[in-house]
Image 1: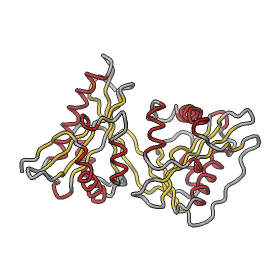
Image 2: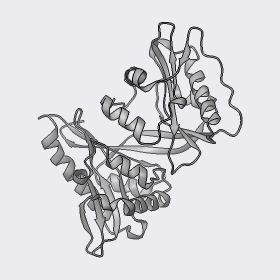
Image 3: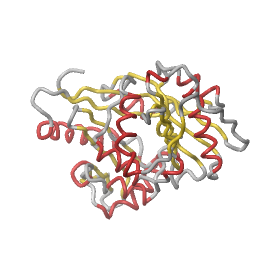
Image 4: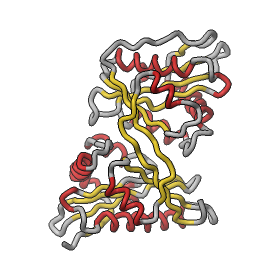
Length: 319
């Protein structure tokens, strides 16, 4: 079959939703999308999908595959997704899409990266998705890390302890607090493996536009001097995951750790989600996290739902 790979057009969105969700369900993955969420992602000011997204179609025009080449030119970090309709597997289409987006990454590197900056591309798949893992292995990607998707049910009341002495919650107001929360998040996670802080305008786009933003879910812990010392930033996981809350950020500044604040923040976050009608909560964590986050989540009743392999490939320079 003479399958054509071309650049994305916005008219492709409904067909892409179908392809992505069929592939995700077949592979027992978790990245289901709706038309609204995919459109919102495509319309972000930094994405430029008509240059950086690619669609595979049959001669009759049926969309059967999709891949993206997204890039942070500040640090030479590339990433993206790739999907093939299950009915069109084992025809080399995944390899073709991967080759097309790698070519696009190299073009973008020449145009957008400073001379001498390396280009490193990262991709992820669940550890049970043997087809994706084999494809990436064949393309010379290396597995560099394992992350866990953890989950807990919220059917029973959540016991949330008081915050440590001298620390209180401050209601979140976007115009007043957004920059301070953004800076606190960077400080909390700057030493975590793989953490790269986005520019503020990108961060606020993600936080406010991907799903309906509800400031009542956000928990901002402050000291007596009104410094932000800890964060728990829950949100709805999205319309494709009804009833599921997602914990984007749970963290404590280094000088306030080992006081029980992290545990209190997590449990208050879970209780807040339950009070707002959510029936489950999820988060993602590095399996080798050095701040004991995994144990913290397990003590709160969270368990590993899926494991994701992080693959990396150097396309220019050195890692």
